[in-house]
Length: 143
Image (cartoon, rainbow, N blue to C red; front, top):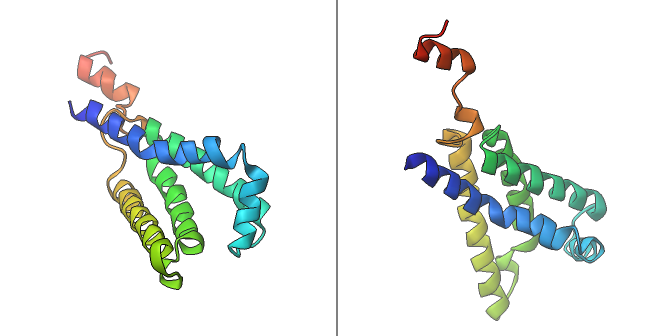
């Protein structure tokens, strides 16, 4: 049961990042670049290309549980930068302040999730935790 729950959890965590890349950033590349430039992001085209790579590589890494600590680190870097540039609620007023505070808090929770994966690994049913072939042979008595 733990393995299935770990896989489902990794898929659910990664979904927001993968869909952000393939459902928004890639098909709307130029519009996202304009939005990033308006927010003060330096070299928005380069940064967006990097963000897309981080989102896809990090998301797939989490799902597969392969080098998940590295994947989580990529996603953590993305989250820190996105939160800094786009969810600065303390500079806003009214309803927009509340909306951005919610987005900020969501990103904090996701940052905590990435730190948890970095600290604890990807869990059961992951490529990082697969049993090496020589251990399987020893266990089964085939030397």
